[in-house]
Image (cartoon, rainbow over all chains, first blue to last red; front, side, top):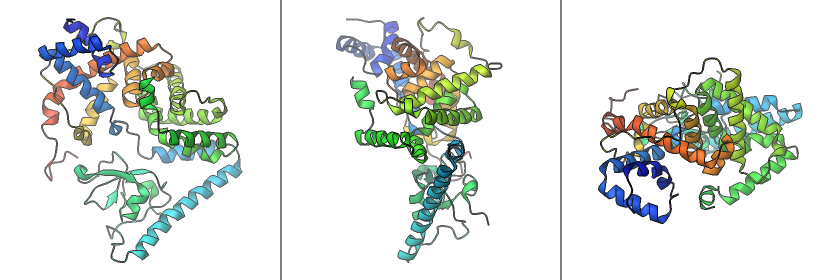
Length: 180
Length: 218
């Protein structure tokens, strides 16, 4: 079965989805072998799907999760539940602070904080994803423009970042810093 | 359906979700954030795909999630919870856009006949692009701009299928269109994005994948 470029373009998306019958699939592959233009279209389209499908393309504004939690807490019915919500948040904060204190006291050779000028964070949801880099001292919200050395950056839950001695970025994590 | 099977989330995660839903339905409302936390980014992205404005998308995402909370009893387990959330968000975003219908100008492309053939432009090869380029904010920005320039009907389908990884059927259901339309629009969206991005990725954007110290653009 021989097919022309126009038919290839019509089917290219289905081909990437593996949603063509074996006969058409064979014909498409035969066509790609002999057609540079269609191969370029295929490669480009595949790149589009791969790039946009990456988690990093879904960015939310800084503080989005925090504001969402506050809104949900505020709008849910019943003050008792709201009170419970605060208890849960306070318990989480105590846990984060507690695990940090435990680490400090149990590993004496570990530096207390990577930066001696740092201020500790408070009330950060312990599973919130933050970005740290190997040589950096602070953790950031994804997308913060002050991330040092992005080549070694990785995303981890905030509780792990705190355990590893990272402290909050004073710019993107402002809302979580201790009010002195 | 094989596609659904691949996309279906971890069964233990699903039963955990089912358990959370039952507990919230029985009055433990404070667990709601835990239930929706894995999806909050996707909800925002779906709203943003329609509204293209961060503040509006954030407000819409909050409204949609509150609505989901209020109507949680109506959730039926035959569809995925994430799809149900996205469906509510899409409706909420469309409603907001209708209310503020005034000044939204759609690109001319949106009025093209989607059934007509689309001829991809003839560029030199766009070979494999390393995913590390996404670490660069300017590259993510270029991708976001290209996406924002698509007509809405293409953008919606592309975001739900290729960014949120809904199946073709789920995308169709969330948008209230047929699976055939999803496929047609998806093809067009992918080809248009390739045409918009190929010149940049074929040239200047990929020439500096890593930065020497002190040459960062930020």
